[in-house]
Length: 429
Ligand code: CMC
Image (tube, rainbow, N blue to C red; front, side, top):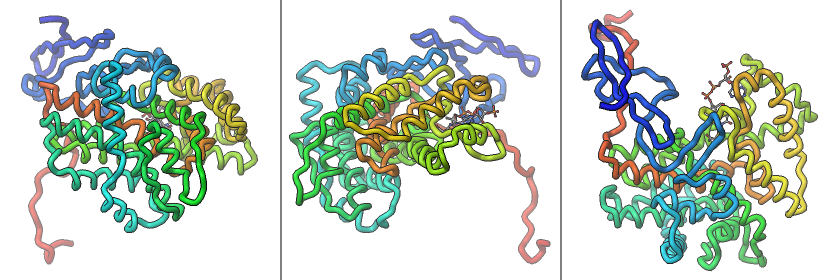
């Protein structure tokens, strides 16, 4: 037996195997704990719980490191493209030229959604939140492809992967068009992934529209930075739903729902709303820093803090730099960027944030770029979903091939009433 840890309980000593990851991270294997001691572990928020072994994304929150399949995020952000990253995450290696061409071709040729899907949009209210539409529509996709539900059928899964990555931008753009009362724009298969999306969002039948390459590139960068982040809330949701052998569409739809919350992907919307509020309130940064520190206020600095990053979020660094570059290239200035920078500067000097290791996260600056591109605020989290989709897929596929796969089913420590006897309604006081 390799390295072990000893646990003494109830007069017995049990040895728990220590499992080491390829970057030296160590974990206690407690899979036999209950059988040998009767104990379970209690870990609210899974702060110390590894739910799986994974070879997809490595992050070291103390050092601010993020790598997809071993490649540093900084290199990928500078040199790669979102679709190449999608391939890398899902299949494990960067594609050879021919492999990539085939992958792109498959994604491109599945970008239209079934015409009947378009009618779903009639049923949603005009002001429906795009995340609700995205999650419903992705779940509904499964009804059109019922022959591809078997998670163990590799060809079927591959087809679902193409369909999901290809159709999510179309579904998202339709949600936006519906909200502003404009006609849906069909995908343009001659355009690259991000240009096609921007075209579906912003072109109208009566006017010429050409996609600004700076905007398409900026969007591609944001999608790369969102593409995976190991066992976060939405990814863990996708895995747990998939662990019941639910199909890929159903699992991805659950990931979208989990991402919606303001503590997760919804933070990018919350950040811009917060910056706008601060601006409208006269731009008094100090007031809002003080409010964030006051627990009774219930206010938090959106886009600050992270469960894992306790040094800096490398994605935030890349986006902050991109903000300056993209806005300059587009000849745009926004006071919100100045406010954001002032907040960051003030927070990083403030003991409260320093002691708690609270730094800007990926969501702090991303909304500024989305706004500059013209993406409406309530679509920000949907953009995050498009970006995160390859990560969810990669994690779901890895799980399906994992020999240790078991249905996700945590236990609990019951704290409710002990056994009591039923009293009929007439006799109850
Ligand atoms: N503003 C003010 N105080 C904060 C903040 C914040 N943004 N974040 C954490 N704290 C405080 C918190 O009150 C607590 O203080 P104390 O120790 O005195 O009780 C301490 O810092 C630790 O916070 P926590 O909530 O226990 O930490 P967590 O790991 O459970 O939560 C988090 C992480 C990201 C949910 C949290 O930092 C947060 O709510 N941030 C704002 C929302 C946000 O930006 N979310 C996006 C996360 S990154 C992208 C993504 O995952 O989608």
